Length: 328
Image (cartoon, rainbow, N blue to C red):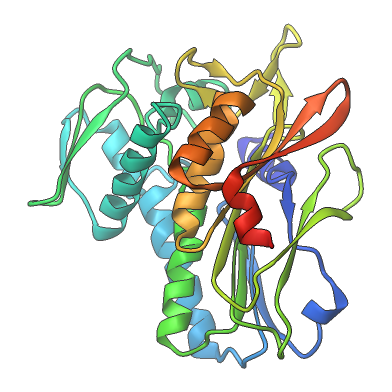
């Protein structure tokens, strides 16, 4: 079983909490473009005609960010930085924007969001090692210099942007479509979603799946109310594998223990009215820290959060205060 197949299989099983539910009213007279990227699938749906030039530009956006943030491409910008022994780097606009948001979420999450755990993830088999012996150092941090758009790594640890790149790509596609006056759309990259405007006079509907369900039926339905709504998910209920001893290994690493997360959370959903990038990063942070602290921080930072947790082999759903504001 080769690495590419494993990557695609894991991507297929990822995003367990959040799926786009194909309701009939989301399917009437809509234009759809789709494809494969980042080891998963993507789609853009709109009640407005999406011309070939827009499809080409959307694909260019997806490819551009892939060559910035991919840990699977040895020549991507982030992979080249990871393998370079120099700790100082001038970076592209896209990468600086991604790292700036990541740093903000890292601070607000009390360090439970950390994008410098790439060596651990690679050693667990969730991304390539490129034939190198990877030793993770204790100091996992970096500094940003806005004046000259540069970064300083404080150790030789590797960046892993898998928890934020899809959200950033969704946001960039949305920004492009709005600029081109294609305001009514639903964008989905591997379960990271933006719904904007309407679908032939009706709002977009997004379904959130019960992690214990083997079907694609939604247990929670979110309505964008004809406005911008970003929703991101994180969950390890199906996105995991086992080591030779039978221990569960997940892609999400607890930065405090430097091990795969082991808590009661089955899935996390975060809603944002401003940014899919932030929603993507926060969903991973909350997944890593456990339900009690996640709800405490979400309420403090006014973030719309829904948690599905394992309560004696039953699903219990917990909400932050902001969640009720967003869905009512």
